[in-house]
Each structure stands twice: as C-alpha cells, then as structure tokens.
Amino acid sequence: MVEKNYTKQNLTQNGIWIFILIWFGQLVSVIGSGVTGFALGIWVYQQTGSVTKLALTSLSATLPSVIISPLAGVLVDRWNQKWIMLISDLVAGLTTGLLALMLFVSNLEIWHIYLATAVQSICTSFQVPAYMTAMTLLVPKQQLTRVNGLLNLGQSMTRLICPILAGVLIAIVKIQGIILLDLATFVFAFVMLLYIRFPKPQIADHTNVTAKSSLLIEVVDSWRYIKAKPGILGLMLFTGVINFMFGTVEILSVPLILSFASATVLGILTSVSGSGMLFGSLAMSIWGGSQRNINNLFCFMLLNGLCIAVIGLKPNVWLIGVAAFVFFFGLPIINSSAYVILQRKVMFNVQGRVFALTGMISTSCLTLAYLVAGPLADNVFKPLMAPSSPLAGSLGQIIGVGSGRSIGLMFIVMGILTMIATILAYQYRPLRLVEKDLPDT
Image 1 (cartoon, rainbow, N blue to C red):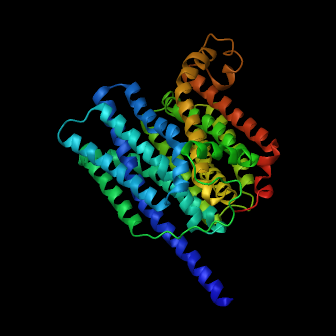
Image 2 (cartoon, rainbow, N blue to C red):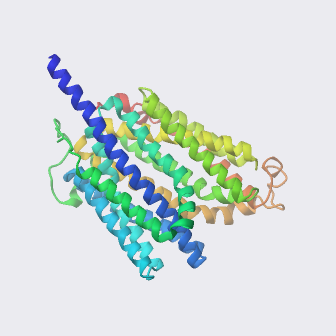
Image 3 (cartoon, helix red, strand yellow):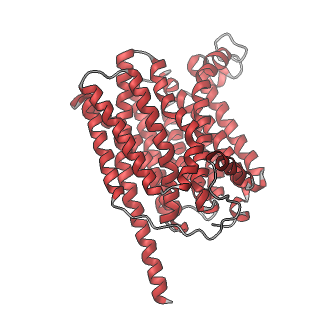
C-alpha cells in the first residue's frame, strides 16, 4: 500500500512538472505573439491611417474562432491533445514566417495580415481546448485552481510586457525583427512540447457520451450533453453575458480616459490594471481559492460590477486607478473559478468540446460588444449627456456632461447590469449548487 501511494504521488508530481514545462513554452510563445500583434496594429494604422482597417484586424482575430470552435472541440476530444497543440503551434509559426517573408521582400499587404490573423485564430480554436483538457489530464483536481492561476499569470504578464516590449523593439529591430523573434518563440514552444510525453487518459464512465460518429452529430451531442447539466449550461451563458458587459467597457476605456487625461496617463492606468491582474493571478496560484469556486465567481463578479460603475462616476485618475486595479485583480479569480468547475464536473472525453463551446459563446459576446459599443456611445448615450439634454440638470449634476461623461454613464449602466446579472444568476439553483449537485469526474 505504501509503495502504491508513493508511485501515485510520483505520478502526480511528474504531471505537475510536465504541465509547468508546457506552460512555460506556451508563455514564451504567447508573449512573442502579443508583441507581434501589438506591433502589427501599429503598422496597419501607420500604413493606412484607418481605424476601420485596424478594427478589422481585431475582427479577423475573433470571428474565425467563433465559427470553427464547435468543430474544433469535437476533434480535440477525438485526437491526441499533444499533437493538436503541436500542429497548432506549427501552423501558426509557419503563418508568422510567411508574414516575415512578405515583409522582407516588401510585398506585405493589409489583406495578408487579415488572412494570417484568421489562420492563427483558427489555430487558437484548437489549441486552447486542447491545452485546458491536457491540464485536467496532468494535474490533480486539488491543484487545478492554482494551475489555472498560473495560466492567468501568463495573461497578465503579456498585458504588462507586450506593449512596452513592442514599443522598444519596433524602434530597434523594426517590424521585421519582431516577427522573426515571434517565429523563434513558436519554435521554442514547439520543441518544448515535442519532447514531453502525455499520459494516456483512463475513462471509467462513458455515460451520456456517444460513440464516434459524424462530426455534425457529435457537435449536436455536445449541446445535448451540456443541456442535460443545467448548472454547466447556466455557467456558460452567465459568463457569456458578463463578457458582453466587460467587452463593452474594454473597447470604451481608451476614449473615456483620453476625454480628460493625456496618453501618458492612459499608459500608466494600463500598467496599473495589468499589475492588478498580475497580483490576482499570483494570489490565486498561492492561495488556491476556497472549496466553493462558484462562490468565488459570484463574489468577485459583484465586486467587478461595482468597480465598473465607480470608474464611470468621476473623471478622476486616482479613483479610476484604484477601481481598475481591483477589477483586474478579480479577473483571474473569476476565470480560474469557472475553468476549475468545468474541469472537475465535465467528463474528460467531452471536455474539449465543452471548452470550445464556452470559448465560442464568450468570443461571440465579445465580438458583439465590439460591434455595438461605438454606436451605443455615439447614438444613444452621447445625446443623453449633452449639455442641453433633459438629464443635464439631474444626472449631469452628479457625473458631469459632455462626450466623455456619456461614456462614463455607459460604464455605470454596464456595472449595474453586471451586478444585476450576478444576483439573478445566483438565484438560479442549478448554477448556485453546481459543485454540490454534480459529482467530480
């Protein structure tokens, strides 16, 4: 018995170390891609002077993922997760190499960037669910919260490092050098992953999961599996709705700050928000969260809704800085809590499609937010907060009037809606008790 426990403990430790190696390789690659994405955005704007073409770059990075995710999730469950990640890294790296070649021969056009970004978006649609499923395979369930904290730590590091690094490198090695460095990070992640062995999953329960059939049938069966678990479905829809609120304020944060402060202040506040996310990720990695992840999610979602509303109240740098820090501190805890619930409650051999569908819903809501935020601000809220509007003598006395204050009102509304959505979600019993009602897989 002692020897058996010792072996099991060794396997657990090996799994954690294997995952840390994978995480480090992917972190290097993500930083390289983040620097390239930021630099390409600058290049597109400098070449065209068009905000619309710059926005199309973001759209090409999200829309293909929305379309392909359901199919990608099925294939992730069918195929080996390691090879999916390897092929995704390889295709994304080749795409980056082609961009570098186009630049060196002075033949790079805007549509090349749209196409390359779309291909990399499709690769991400496969890689992310494979990555999350591999985590469940390698890491014991009691460590999942801490490991998800590591994932968010990587995201926060890219948020802090990539804009600064891109600004420095674009002056030293130009856009060509940045893309070559990105290609090198893809190679590093690929080689790191190539020499790592994944253990084979042992699935004891095949209930409610169909045998392999046509891809379309398996996509439909994925929805049936989720619909049979109202708590999981509620979690996916709730996070999608919240993503719409968060996406709306994200797209409007730059014009809100620039309406009363300089670009330097905007950069400082961006760094403050990134540091909040960094500390939140570290806290989650060290603390590991409470036993009730759903409570973590509800509490910090309420707090984040309050932070959004506070940001819109006054054009005050200190007030916005504190609220932004707290907001981004809570994001890793929210994300980690949601991921851990899915990893613990969804069977391993359908996790790929569940993560893919979750990503599809979240990305769809973000895309919708990006599309409607501008028209809402210009055509609905701006007239409401004009100096001559009916609200100028009432609400305008509290938050002020003008174009910047119309965006502030949007922040207040989105913050209140976030809190209302959280309270309503808490009333939904299958979601509130998802960890109690559903057994761990």
